[in-house]
Amino acid sequence: MPALWLSRVTVTDAEAYGKYAKLAVPVVERHGGRFIARGGRVVQIEGTASDRNTVIRFDTVEAAEACYQSEGYQAALEFANEASVRNLTIVEITE
Image (cartoon, rainbow, N blue to C red):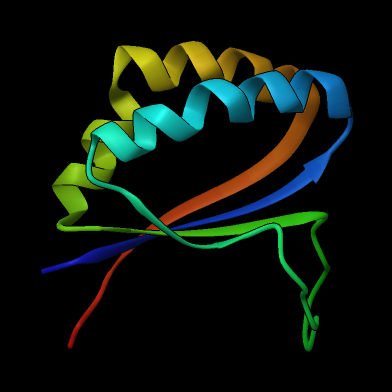
């Protein structure tokens, strides 16, 4: 079953976060991830808003997890960890 990678981010250092994004995007694409939403307009209905919201579709939950665990993504994540507060969830799509 396909899966969605849901990322909610509050950026604390825009320059460092930009380095993360530059490295992370090609890694996600190499793992078959397709960006559905990335940094667009958000209407917060409940809870706390985040600066940045990203939705990526993968073929499977396992593919999304493999992307996250990959050496390339972990290298990119070093920049994000110092530059943001993040919540990342992988959700299986039940179509």
